[in-house]
Structures are given as structure tokens and as C-alpha cells.
Image (cartoon, rainbow, N blue to C red; front, side, top):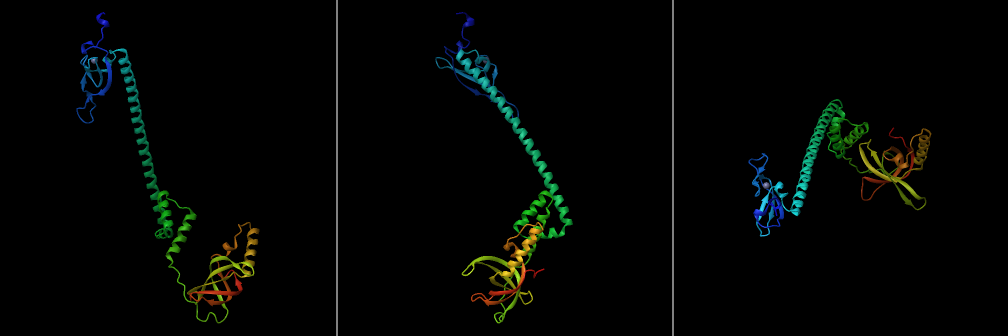
Length: 300
Ligand SMILES: [Zn+2]
């Protein structure tokens, strides 16, 4: 056996030289300063960062750098080469990942900046808008969930649609009005037929012994020249149905969307003559019967 064919590692002991693992030995002089090889090759004494560990047949352990690892026997060489190629791949992957992270962070920062610019613009526009539209500005001050939502959007986008503006004004006027107090019906209300004028608050179909179903309505009764209010309940007069059907014909002729009788009646200010009976348990509540002289346009 010539000297050149002798195994490079014989001075460590008898072979085979079994590859165990790779460890990293880096000394870092100061935080932020790249590390330097912290160990040296037991074979050639070069400074090494990656220590390829082997052991001999008589269990002597030694470490060499990646170049010297290639001088080991074929199986160990394969291990070392495999490790090196994996390591290169791993490093490339880590570099790419770091770049991706940087790119993402940059994009995120740009997006945030754009958003801040938009928010600032939206706020400035909203402030200008509300300086000119004091009615809306006042309405936005009312404590209401929907108003608060719309207000937040105005300050975000700097605009408001006509529909939303209308809604805010309507809600604000509702919130600003105190809850209506219903008063006792006048003591002489049962004595004779009375003229009832007021707003239709609600409608409902009720089963009826003779007519199958009959439409009933709850009406605010503004007695005392609209100052005092009670509620009365009774059948919707046939005249109301006639007026409704006439209105429906008009709607169809004019190409308007038709309404249900509920939509037509709900909230409408009407007037009619009727007899009223005061409820036994609630003096603010009455039952009207036999309505006549119906006026569907008492509020117009
Ligand atoms: Zn070496």
C-alpha cells in the first residue's frame, strides 16, 4: 500500500471513520458582528465554523472542516457532501425567506402610509363638509347607534350620500323628540259620537265571526286640539279601502310602485266619526265602533 493510498485519517486511529454529526462552532465577538469560526480542524488546523465529527474504530472522536471531511472514506464523504448541499439549500432558503419578509414589511408599511393619508384626507373633507352643513353636523351629535356608524364612515371617507344624510336627520329628529305621553280619554267621550283625528300607528288583520277577517287599526286620538293623545282601536272603515284602491289605480296609471293597504295606512293622519268606549283597564285606551265620514287626507 503506497503512502498516497493510505487513508488521510489514519493518524487519528484505525478506520473505518464513522461520520456522526455536524455541529456549528462560531464565536461572536459582539452583538451584531458576524461570527468567526470558533474551532479548528483536527486534521489541518484551519479555522472551521462547521465541525464534522467522526469516530475511529477504537472510538476516538475527532472533528474536521468540510474540506477535510471529503478526505474521509466514501460513505462519510457522501454524508458530508449531502450535508453540505442541504446546508447550501437551507441557507438559500433562509436568505429568500428573509428577503420575502423584508418585501412584505415594506409593502405593509406602504399600505399603512396610504391608509393614513386617506384617513387624514377623509377627516379633513368631513370637517369641511360639516362646516358647510350645520344641520347635518348638529344631527350627528345625537346619541344613536346608526348615527354613530354613519358619522364614523363620513370621517373615514369624507362624504355622505343623500340617502344617508336624510336618514341621519330623520333619526336625530326622532331621538330629539321626547317619548309621547298618552293621556286619559275625555270623560264625556262615550256620551256621543266624536270626531277622531290622528295618526295610524299600527294595523292588523283579526279573525271575525261574520266576515272571515277584518282589518283593524290603532289610531292616535288627538283630543284637546292635538295637545292630548290617547289611543283608540277598531276596524278600518270600508271607505278607507275604497280610497286605497283609488290610490292604487292612480299609482298604476302613473307607473309608480303600488303599495299594500298597510303601507298606505301606516303613519297616515286620518279622521273619522265614531263612538268610543273607554277600556276598563286603561283610561288612555278606547275602542271605536261604526266609523263614518272617513277622511284619508286629514294630515294634508
Ligand atoms: Zn482540515
